[in-house]
Length: 312
Image (cartoon, rainbow, N blue to C red; front, side):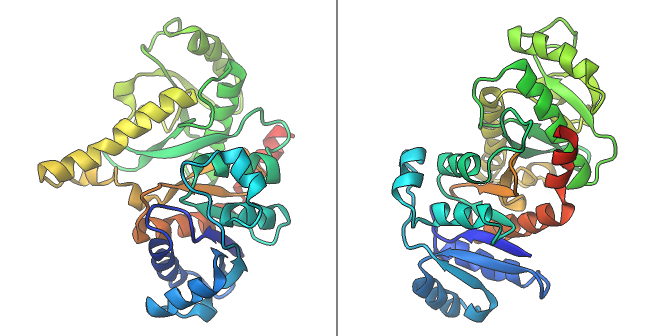
């Protein structure tokens, strides 16, 4: 197993990514290797300086970085030696089994679509995120930003992707799927949700339980919540702020602690032909470590094969 990691991606790169990689490597088995994409000589020096062993890793020299503000498509094509472009080149050629970066989200999406591409039959890949439940465990919310404008058929597929993700990666048996809406009644909502509801109701590949309101999100109402990327991104940013508010207010609570993005590492792009994980731009070493370990779990789950079997 080879887990690709962009060393140059993120606000605190490369030090945070290198420290996180060192910590993740300690939890991997002998047949699991992290492949680092960045300036090879500088990376090796920083690993040794941080107390790691540079011989524990594999390297691909990719000295250029795609900045957060750069245009994704232009950057991918005009910077073929960038860490993100090289990462997707290796992923496409199956020289690595997954690729993760806390860098430019747009570039990660573009790289996914133009290199490993969407699984045949998938209309649009979606970004999924984890939402803590009040009692225990967590739910999955998608899409949270890949597709601001969606059609009903896309949301119907997101429900399948999210359900498979919950089953095969997090071992949730027969996950309950809810459509995020402004009311629980079937006729409630806008044109998108009212058109999506009958598709989900007729979908025999999911366990659809009806509409879910915003207040249901942190409950046991559903395991998978489906929405368009615009709505999902607003909800995600609001949820992320909960943990920050508790820190600023100076109180500690186990439930709100689970909103800390560091625990989950990153968000997967569901529906492409290989595991691709997008990390938070402000990823710390702890977040990078968990992103690498999450990549490992994605590979081991053979989740991609499950999607192919459904959509073929």
